[in-house]
Length: 345
Image 1 (cartoon, rainbow, N blue to C red):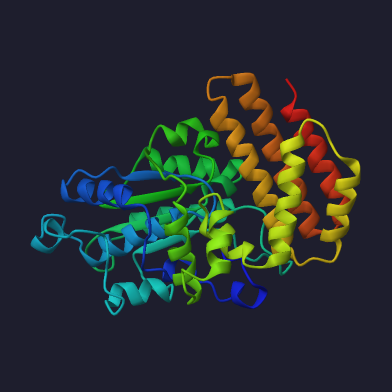
Image 2: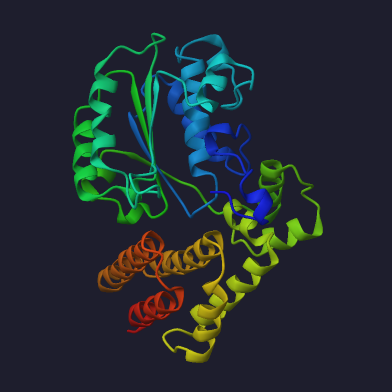
């Protein structure tokens, strides 16, 4: 996740390259304590909103475990955090995607030259020989799924087989932006670790560290306050045009189930010539609204089903619009029609 000023956005580091973690010390200590205890759960579902550091935490834990394979070792027992020195060989291998004992599942560029809409089952099946062989450095085998929300049904079934029969000294970290929607049979085999949205100060510090800017910069602070605790959103909002688009979307969302057709036309026109990062920012704002609906009515199964269906329809429509380069205005009208229906009742 790396959106902000157009030039900077390309430079924001991938979570595998991000060594600092902001605002999630409690979750970090939970992982560290479980590892020290020698009976760490083999699978963790790390949940929370988009862009708050879930994948960063997963990579941080993977880096620590692979650098310190013996939980009983003195340096593990006295460690205060999961930090690993950037010049450690394991850290360098992970950053360069060359660590033999770390397997990553994420969407990849397909034959069309564009990012696949989901994580393919063929990728997940690579885990069978990976976990079936001896760790290259005599320690652990670690896999990260970023994110489990992007698995198709075949991929979910393949992952479930791995979770049902976990090999010794294996760890899986499943990142999810909506853990409540993860397949129940997968959730039940994982330890859930929910991360909260970051405080504005932590957001500013994390975003500034990602792109080499001052956390006290006025634009950085303004973006952090508007980001709803997400570093990814902060980086996106550093572009003034993106911030204006997000405000338009927020106004439309706040009015639901009523729809301002004129405002939708204005939003559709604004997105017509915008780059894909700005479109992704709009989708992110809509997904954030949907996540908030889930949090407000956790016991209302009918409402939850309606929101989940809206989530699936909207993200599928957005993916198809990107894949086939479809006109954005009809996409906007379609999405807000779905949202209005979800907001009723």
